[in-house]
Length: 191
Image 1: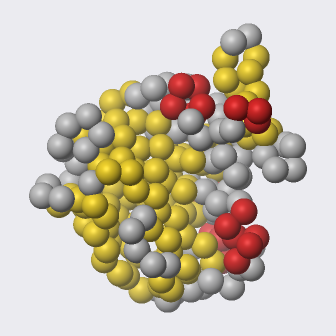
Image 2 (image 1 turned 180 degrees about the horizontal axis):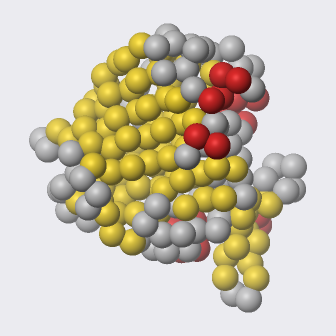
């Protein structure tokens, strides 16, 4: 679809007191429904910007097309889990959750790039998959079964967060003293 070639940028900027300022830019030609922890869903019109604040703790944020059927959009979604102040007041833990598949490819970048390799591979991802859905090969968690019994293969390459399909996920990192995060939803050929 042509409109997938446009980009949605979500900027996470730091607010050291109690959370993070989030600047959401919708650069698509279509309105988005934005969901974020602690806030009611809101519509972000095409080519518009909105600022929100996420509190310390576990936060999830994602966007879907406003025109998309609600049950369909909620069933398959790519989202960022951003735990603010995970190990210390200035350290965040991020993860792209692909348990239920994806709507749009996603990329997460920290500025400045002060991120450490985290729980590289299966341990962090186990918490995002029901035990009966885990795919384990040679005592290594390789993936999670989708609702349609297909496999989401984690394929984690630590230090990068990107999802270009439910078969490619570079997933987990810890970041410290970050000024802001950029979350990009885009057509997978964009990067």
